Figure (cartoon, rainbow, N blue to C red):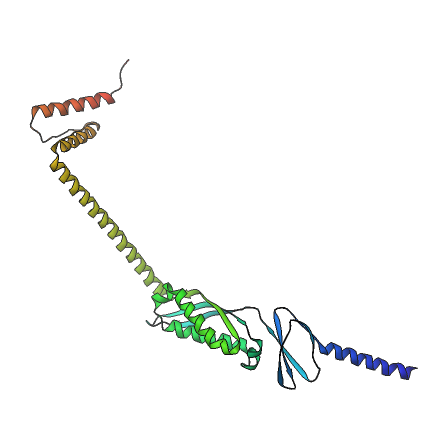
Length: 263
């Protein structure tokens, strides 16, 4: 009896191990690249599929977007300024077969290529362009990386420059330049204001020259405003007694309006 049970148990264990090695499950965001006796069969998944143990080899590739954090890449700009650049490269596998058979390790290959392209393109740009034209530079880097990684089945979706770290001396120089630029703008604004004021005053003088009555009314209005101040002496250029009497009467009227009435 035991002699019969042992072979059956051995066969069942062998079948269980065979089925366990034959059944493969690939998630929705993964693909399995299948090789049979060294020859490419093709991608498999997602879901459940079977392989032939000892004959088939499978490599599972993740299709999700990968974020490569390229920190402190040393760059020398076109105008010989040394700086450190922090950036992020976003890429994903779009062809799992190419990512396996065209390159040994697509992750390290893509990351090393990203560093090289970043140094190359940023090194051909001046510091001002690096600080002010970041979107144009990142788009150029992304396009060049995408073209170079396309034979590997890799899609570079975005490149983002997060920070540009400058030497202390260069930071001080940029701060002084910004301060000088603000001073220049403030002086231009003041000069424009003076110019507009002078223009308006010239136009007003021309109008007063054409209409002397308006000038006299303006003079009387100014005298009325001055007479409201206490302990002030009003000086007028007119020698006409009638005009002087009008000014005196205007002054007395203003002072009388400001003096409280006694009950």
